[in-house]
Amino acid sequence: MNTLFVIVGPTGVGKTDISIRLAKMFGCAIFSCDSRQMFRELKIGTAAPTEKQLQEVPHFFVGHKSIFETYSAGQFELDAIPMIESELKRTQNSLLVGGSMLYVDAICKGIDDIPTIDPKTRQEVLNFYAEEGIEGVRRKLKLLDPEHYREVDLMNVKRMLHALEVCEMTGRPFSDLRTQSVKRRNFSIVKIGLTRPREELYERINQRVLQMMEEGLEDEARVFYPHKALNSLNTVGYKELFNYFDGSWTKEFAINMIQQNSRRYAKKQLTWFNRDKEITWFHPESEKEIVEFVQSKL
RNA sequence: GGGUAGUUACCAGAGUGGCCAAAUGGGACUGACUGUAACUCAGUUGUCUUUCGACUUCGGUGGUUCGAAUCCAUCACUACCCA
Image (cartoon, rainbow, N blue to C red; front, side, top):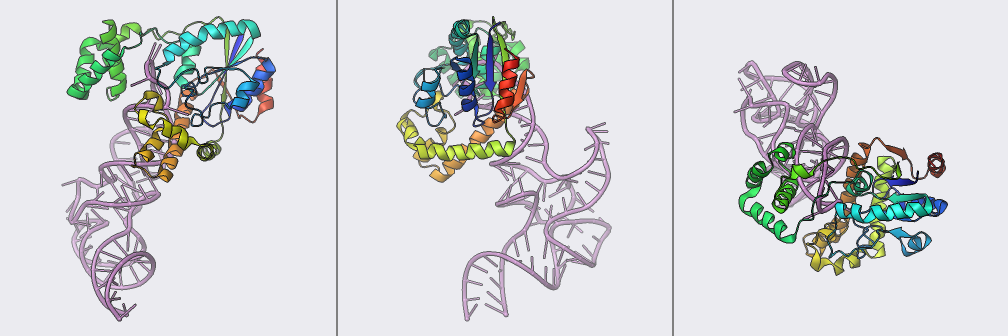
Protein backbone atom coordinates (compact mmCIF):
# COMPACT_ATOMS: atom_id res chain seq x y z
CA MET A 1 0.00 0.00 0.00
CA ASN A 2 1.06 3.56 -0.53
CA THR A 3 2.46 5.24 2.51
CA LEU A 4 2.24 8.73 3.87
CA PHE A 5 5.15 9.46 6.18
CA VAL A 6 4.05 11.99 8.74
CA ILE A 7 6.80 14.02 10.33
CA VAL A 8 5.84 15.87 13.45
CA GLY A 9 7.67 17.68 16.21
CA PRO A 10 7.80 20.91 18.12
CA THR A 11 8.57 24.23 16.54
CA GLY A 12 12.23 24.80 15.92
CA VAL A 13 13.25 21.18 16.26
CA GLY A 14 14.45 20.96 12.66
CA LYS A 15 11.66 19.34 10.65
CA THR A 16 12.24 21.20 7.40
CA ASP A 17 15.78 20.07 6.70
CA ILE A 18 15.23 16.38 7.22
CA SER A 19 11.94 16.41 5.35
CA ILE A 20 13.53 17.97 2.29
CA ARG A 21 16.15 15.27 2.37
CA LEU A 22 13.51 12.54 2.56
CA ALA A 23 11.43 14.16 -0.16
CA LYS A 24 14.40 14.11 -2.48
CA MET A 25 14.96 10.48 -1.64
CA PHE A 26 11.39 9.63 -2.56
CA GLY A 27 11.16 12.10 -5.38
CA CYS A 28 7.96 13.33 -3.82
CA ALA A 29 6.44 16.61 -2.79
CA ILE A 30 5.89 17.77 0.77
CA PHE A 31 2.49 18.42 2.27
CA SER A 32 2.95 21.06 4.87
CA CYS A 33 0.79 20.74 7.93
CA ASP A 34 1.29 24.06 9.57
CA SER A 35 -1.66 26.25 10.35
CA ARG A 36 0.37 29.45 10.06
CA GLN A 37 2.76 28.75 7.22
CA MET A 38 -0.36 28.47 5.12
CA PHE A 39 -0.66 32.22 5.13
CA ARG A 40 1.42 33.69 2.37
CA GLU A 41 1.89 36.98 4.20
CA LEU A 42 3.54 35.29 7.17
CA LYS A 43 6.95 34.10 6.13
CA ILE A 44 9.64 35.09 8.54
CA GLY A 45 7.67 34.67 11.75
CA THR A 46 6.39 31.24 10.85
CA ALA A 47 9.79 30.03 9.69
CA ALA A 48 8.20 28.99 6.41
CA PRO A 49 10.41 27.13 3.94
CA THR A 50 12.57 29.53 1.96
CA GLU A 51 12.29 30.20 -1.77
CA LYS A 52 15.31 28.03 -2.29
CA GLN A 53 13.82 25.16 -0.32
CA LEU A 54 10.54 25.51 -2.18
CA GLN A 55 12.40 25.23 -5.43
CA GLU A 56 14.25 22.16 -4.30
CA VAL A 57 11.08 20.33 -3.38
CA PRO A 58 7.51 21.30 -4.23
CA HIS A 59 5.43 22.08 -1.15
CA PHE A 60 1.69 22.06 -0.86
CA PHE A 61 -0.12 24.24 1.67
CA VAL A 62 2.63 26.76 2.15
CA GLY A 63 1.39 30.26 1.47
CA HIS A 64 -1.76 29.06 -0.24
CA LYS A 65 -4.04 31.29 1.80
CA SER A 66 -4.19 34.92 2.75
CA ILE A 67 -4.46 36.09 6.32
CA PHE A 68 -7.75 37.70 5.32
CA GLU A 69 -9.28 34.32 4.51
CA THR A 70 -10.63 32.04 7.17
CA TYR A 71 -9.40 28.53 7.32
CA SER A 72 -9.71 25.58 9.62
CA ALA A 73 -8.52 22.09 10.32
CA GLY A 74 -11.74 20.72 8.88
CA GLN A 75 -11.25 22.56 5.63
CA PHE A 76 -7.66 21.41 5.55
CA GLU A 77 -8.78 17.80 5.67
CA LEU A 78 -11.19 18.36 2.81
CA ASP A 79 -8.56 20.11 0.74
CA ALA A 80 -5.60 17.92 1.48
CA ILE A 81 -6.90 14.36 1.42
CA PRO A 82 -7.75 14.25 -2.30
CA MET A 83 -4.42 15.83 -3.12
CA ILE A 84 -2.52 13.39 -0.94
CA GLU A 85 -4.33 10.50 -2.56
CA SER A 86 -3.55 11.59 -6.08
CA GLU A 87 0.03 12.41 -5.18
CA LEU A 88 0.48 8.95 -3.65
CA LYS A 89 -0.73 7.36 -6.86
CA ARG A 90 2.08 9.11 -8.61
CA THR A 91 4.95 8.65 -6.19
CA GLN A 92 3.89 5.73 -3.92
CA ASN A 93 5.24 7.49 -0.87
CA SER A 94 4.78 11.00 0.30
CA LEU A 95 5.43 13.28 3.21
CA LEU A 96 3.27 15.27 5.54
CA VAL A 97 5.35 17.61 7.66
CA GLY A 98 4.25 19.96 10.33
CA GLY A 99 3.62 20.82 13.91
CA SER A 100 -0.03 21.83 13.95
CA MET A 101 -1.43 19.09 16.11
CA LEU A 102 -5.06 19.35 15.21
CA TYR A 103 -4.25 19.56 11.53
CA VAL A 104 -2.14 16.43 11.74
CA ASP A 105 -5.03 14.62 13.36
CA ALA A 106 -7.38 15.94 10.71
CA ILE A 107 -5.31 14.12 8.12
CA CYS A 108 -4.45 11.01 10.09
CA LYS A 109 -7.75 10.40 11.85
CA GLY A 110 -10.16 12.76 10.20
CA ILE A 111 -12.46 15.06 12.05
CA ASP A 112 -16.20 15.18 12.08
CA ASP A 113 -18.14 16.94 9.44
CA ILE A 114 -19.28 20.08 11.16
CA PRO A 115 -20.44 23.02 9.11
CA THR A 116 -18.39 26.17 8.96
CA ILE A 117 -19.92 28.76 11.21
CA ASP A 118 -21.22 31.78 9.37
CA PRO A 119 -20.09 35.18 10.62
CA LYS A 120 -23.59 36.15 11.69
CA THR A 121 -23.99 33.19 14.04
CA ARG A 122 -20.51 33.72 15.37
CA GLN A 123 -21.28 37.32 16.17
CA GLU A 124 -24.58 36.46 17.79
CA VAL A 125 -22.93 33.95 20.07
CA LEU A 126 -20.21 36.43 20.94
CA ASN A 127 -22.83 39.03 21.75
CA PHE A 128 -24.63 36.57 23.94
CA TYR A 129 -21.43 35.90 25.84
CA ALA A 130 -20.78 39.61 26.23
CA GLU A 131 -24.22 40.07 27.77
CA GLU A 132 -24.71 36.92 29.77
CA GLY A 133 -21.15 36.00 30.68
CA ILE A 134 -19.78 32.54 31.26
CA GLU A 135 -22.75 31.59 33.43
CA GLY A 136 -25.13 32.39 30.60
CA VAL A 137 -23.05 30.37 28.18
CA ARG A 138 -23.12 27.38 30.50
CA ARG A 139 -26.84 27.70 31.05
CA LYS A 140 -27.57 27.83 27.36
CA LEU A 141 -25.27 24.97 26.54
CA LYS A 142 -26.85 22.84 29.25
CA LEU A 143 -30.19 23.54 27.64
CA LEU A 144 -29.21 23.00 24.02
CA ASP A 145 -26.79 20.12 24.48
CA PRO A 146 -26.87 18.54 27.94
CA GLU A 147 -24.63 15.71 26.80
CA HIS A 148 -21.84 17.99 25.69
CA TYR A 149 -22.35 20.12 28.77
CA ARG A 150 -21.36 17.14 30.87
CA GLU A 151 -18.15 16.65 28.93
CA VAL A 152 -16.81 20.09 28.21
CA ASP A 153 -14.41 22.02 30.32
CA LEU A 154 -16.82 24.48 31.89
CA MET A 155 -14.00 26.94 32.34
CA ASN A 156 -13.12 26.99 28.68
CA VAL A 157 -15.35 29.66 27.25
CA LYS A 158 -14.01 29.43 23.74
CA ARG A 159 -14.81 25.73 23.44
CA MET A 160 -18.27 26.23 24.88
CA LEU A 161 -18.94 29.08 22.51
CA HIS A 162 -18.03 26.90 19.61
CA ALA A 163 -20.40 24.22 20.77
CA LEU A 164 -23.11 26.85 21.02
CA GLU A 165 -22.37 28.12 17.53
CA VAL A 166 -22.76 24.66 16.14
CA CYS A 167 -26.04 24.11 17.99
CA GLU A 168 -27.38 27.43 16.73
CA MET A 169 -26.15 26.84 13.23
CA THR A 170 -27.42 23.32 12.76
CA GLY A 171 -30.36 23.28 15.13
CA ARG A 172 -28.94 20.07 16.53
CA PRO A 173 -26.86 19.36 19.62
CA PHE A 174 -23.14 19.60 18.97
CA SER A 175 -22.64 16.19 20.51
CA ASP A 176 -24.83 14.64 17.77
CA LEU A 177 -22.29 15.73 15.21
CA ARG A 178 -19.32 14.51 17.17
CA THR A 179 -18.81 10.88 16.29
CA GLN A 180 -15.18 10.96 17.39
CA SER A 181 -14.55 8.10 15.06
CA VAL A 182 -11.30 7.51 13.25
CA LYS A 183 -11.65 7.64 9.49
CA ARG A 184 -10.01 4.94 7.44
CA ARG A 185 -7.66 6.11 4.75
CA ASN A 186 -6.73 4.25 1.61
CA PHE A 187 -3.05 4.69 2.38
CA SER A 188 -0.87 3.72 5.31
CA ILE A 189 0.45 6.23 7.74
CA VAL A 190 3.83 6.07 9.42
CA LYS A 191 4.46 8.70 12.04
CA ILE A 192 7.91 10.01 12.80
CA GLY A 193 8.43 12.36 15.70
CA LEU A 194 11.41 14.65 15.96
CA THR A 195 12.54 15.85 19.34
CA ARG A 196 15.56 17.10 21.21
CA PRO A 197 16.52 17.43 24.85
CA ARG A 198 14.47 20.26 26.28
CA GLU A 199 17.41 22.57 26.89
CA GLU A 200 18.73 22.10 23.39
CA LEU A 201 15.31 22.74 21.87
CA TYR A 202 14.76 25.88 23.88
CA GLU A 203 18.17 27.21 23.01
CA ARG A 204 17.44 26.70 19.31
CA ILE A 205 14.10 28.44 19.66
CA ASN A 206 15.67 31.42 21.42
CA GLN A 207 18.30 31.71 18.73
CA ARG A 208 15.80 31.36 15.94
CA VAL A 209 13.70 34.20 17.26
CA LEU A 210 16.74 36.46 17.26
CA GLN A 211 17.47 35.36 13.74
CA MET A 212 13.91 36.16 12.65
CA MET A 213 14.36 39.66 13.99
CA GLU A 214 17.52 40.02 11.95
CA GLU A 215 15.70 38.81 8.89
CA GLY A 216 13.12 41.54 9.25
CA LEU A 217 10.27 40.11 11.29
CA GLU A 218 9.54 43.56 12.67
CA ASP A 219 8.82 45.01 9.23
CA GLU A 220 6.82 41.98 8.24
CA ALA A 221 4.62 42.35 11.29
CA ARG A 222 4.28 46.10 11.05
CA VAL A 223 2.61 45.86 7.67
CA PHE A 224 -0.24 43.89 9.22
CA TYR A 225 -0.49 45.80 12.46
CA PRO A 226 -3.75 47.45 11.34
CA HIS A 227 -5.26 43.97 11.02
CA LYS A 228 -4.03 42.67 14.33
CA ALA A 229 -7.48 41.47 15.33
CA LEU A 230 -7.48 38.80 12.62
CA ASN A 231 -7.33 35.30 13.96
CA SER A 232 -4.56 34.50 11.53
CA LEU A 233 -2.46 37.12 13.26
CA ASN A 234 -3.06 35.72 16.69
CA THR A 235 0.24 34.05 16.14
CA VAL A 236 3.43 33.88 18.14
CA GLY A 237 5.93 36.31 16.71
CA TYR A 238 3.31 38.78 15.57
CA LYS A 239 1.01 39.32 18.49
CA GLU A 240 3.94 40.23 20.72
CA LEU A 241 5.29 42.76 18.24
CA PHE A 242 1.85 44.33 18.01
CA ASN A 243 2.13 45.06 21.71
CA TYR A 244 5.43 46.77 20.99
CA PHE A 245 3.93 48.78 18.12
CA ASP A 246 1.11 50.09 20.24
CA GLY A 247 3.55 51.12 22.93
CA SER A 248 2.58 48.75 25.71
CA TRP A 249 5.80 46.74 25.54
CA THR A 250 9.40 47.58 24.82
CA LYS A 251 10.94 45.91 21.83
CA GLU A 252 13.29 43.94 24.01
CA PHE A 253 10.42 42.68 26.13
CA ALA A 254 8.43 41.73 23.06
CA ILE A 255 11.35 39.69 21.78
CA ASN A 256 11.64 37.93 25.12
CA MET A 257 7.95 37.15 24.99
CA ILE A 258 8.22 35.74 21.48
CA GLN A 259 10.90 33.44 22.77
CA GLN A 260 8.88 32.46 25.81
CA ASN A 261 5.67 31.86 23.88
CA SER A 262 7.53 29.84 21.28
CA ARG A 263 8.95 27.65 24.03
CA ARG A 264 5.51 27.19 25.51
CA TYR A 265 4.07 26.32 22.17
CA ALA A 266 6.81 23.75 21.67
CA LYS A 267 5.92 22.20 25.02
CA LYS A 268 2.23 22.04 24.13
CA GLN A 269 3.11 20.33 20.90
CA LEU A 270 5.20 17.78 22.76
CA THR A 271 2.37 17.15 25.22
CA TRP A 272 -0.04 16.52 22.38
CA PHE A 273 2.32 14.34 20.36
CA ASN A 274 3.51 12.35 23.37
CA ARG A 275 0.02 11.05 23.75
CA ASP A 276 0.16 9.51 20.29
CA LYS A 277 1.65 6.05 20.73
CA GLU A 278 1.97 5.57 16.98
CA ILE A 279 4.84 8.00 16.79
CA THR A 280 8.40 6.72 16.60
CA TRP A 281 10.76 9.30 17.94
CA PHE A 282 14.15 10.43 16.65
CA HIS A 283 16.65 13.18 17.16
CA PRO A 284 16.52 15.27 13.97
CA GLU A 285 20.23 14.89 13.47
CA SER A 286 20.09 11.09 13.55
CA GLU A 287 19.58 11.10 9.83
CA LYS A 288 20.96 7.63 9.33
CA GLU A 289 18.51 6.05 11.77
CA ILE A 290 15.62 7.98 10.33
CA VAL A 291 16.42 6.88 6.80
CA GLU A 292 16.84 3.28 7.93
CA PHE A 293 13.51 3.44 9.71
CA VAL A 294 11.80 4.91 6.68
CA GLN A 295 13.27 2.24 4.43
CA SER A 296 12.11 -0.49 6.75
CA LYS A 297 8.58 0.76 6.28
CA LEU A 298 8.61 0.84 2.49
C1' G B 1 30.49 57.40 61.85
C1' G B 2 24.87 58.53 62.57
C1' G B 3 19.79 57.55 61.01
C1' U B 4 15.84 55.08 58.61
C1' A B 5 13.78 51.07 55.93
C1' G B 6 14.36 46.25 54.73
C1' U B 7 16.05 40.63 54.40
C1' U B 8 9.68 35.56 53.27
C1' A B 9 9.58 29.64 48.60
C1' C B 10 12.73 29.93 41.54
C1' C B 11 11.54 35.55 41.17
C1' A B 12 8.45 39.62 42.74
C1' G B 13 5.55 40.24 46.93
C1' A B 14 1.48 39.84 51.02
C1' G B 15 1.40 38.20 55.91
C1' U B 16 3.20 41.65 61.70
C1' G B 17 1.48 36.15 68.09
C1' G B 18 -2.38 30.54 67.10
C1' C B 19 -7.18 30.22 61.43
C1' C B 20 0.57 29.76 58.08
C1' A B 21 3.76 25.24 54.36
C1' A B 22 2.69 30.72 54.33
C1' A B 23 -2.17 35.19 50.04
C1' U B 24 -1.38 37.01 45.13
C1' G B 25 1.24 37.61 40.52
C1' G B 26 5.16 36.01 37.31
C1' G B 27 8.15 32.03 35.87
C1' A B 28 8.70 26.77 35.58
C1' C B 29 6.65 22.01 35.27
C1' U B 30 2.51 18.67 34.05
C1' G B 31 -1.82 17.92 31.52
C1' A B 32 -6.68 18.57 28.55
C1' C B 33 -8.08 19.78 23.79
C1' U B 34 -12.48 17.18 16.71
C1' G B 35 -12.96 23.52 13.07
C1' U B 36 -10.65 30.64 15.02
C1' A B 37 -5.94 25.20 17.49
C1' A B 38 1.02 29.07 17.10
C1' C B 39 -6.07 29.06 19.80
C1' U B 40 -8.36 28.13 24.42
C1' C B 41 -8.44 25.84 29.26
C1' A B 42 -6.80 23.24 33.74
C1' G B 43 -3.56 21.21 37.68
C1' U B 44 1.09 21.21 40.44
C1' U B 45 5.03 24.19 42.32
C1' G B 46 9.30 23.09 50.74
C1' U B 47 10.40 17.52 51.71
C1' C B 48 8.33 12.49 52.39
C1' U B 49 3.49 10.07 51.37
C1' U B 50 -1.46 7.22 46.77
C1' U B 51 -4.75 9.58 50.66
C1' C B 52 -5.04 10.87 55.75
C1' G B 53 -0.97 12.94 57.45
C1' A B 54 4.11 13.56 59.12
C1' C B 55 8.40 16.53 58.97
C1' U B 56 11.70 20.96 57.95
C1' U B 57 11.08 26.39 56.58
C1' C B 58 10.22 32.97 56.42
C1' G B 59 18.79 36.27 56.66
C1' G B 60 22.09 33.81 61.22
C1' U B 61 22.16 33.03 66.48
C1' G B 62 20.02 33.44 71.18
C1' G B 63 15.69 34.77 73.96
C1' U B 64 10.27 35.86 75.51
C1' U B 65 5.74 32.78 75.09
C1' C B 66 1.57 27.16 76.13
C1' G B 67 2.49 28.82 70.92
C1' A B 68 6.85 33.09 66.74
C1' A B 69 7.52 34.48 59.69
C1' U B 70 5.21 37.79 63.24
C1' C B 71 7.70 40.24 69.87
C1' C B 72 12.91 41.22 72.16
C1' A B 73 18.43 41.10 71.86
C1' U B 74 22.44 40.55 68.88
C1' C B 75 25.27 39.61 64.42
C1' A B 76 25.44 39.73 59.04
C1' C B 77 23.88 41.74 54.58
C1' U B 78 21.01 45.33 51.28
C1' A B 79 18.84 50.13 50.08
C1' C B 80 18.17 55.15 50.91
C1' C B 81 19.20 59.58 53.81
C1' C B 82 22.61 62.61 56.97
C1' A B 83 27.87 63.25 57.83
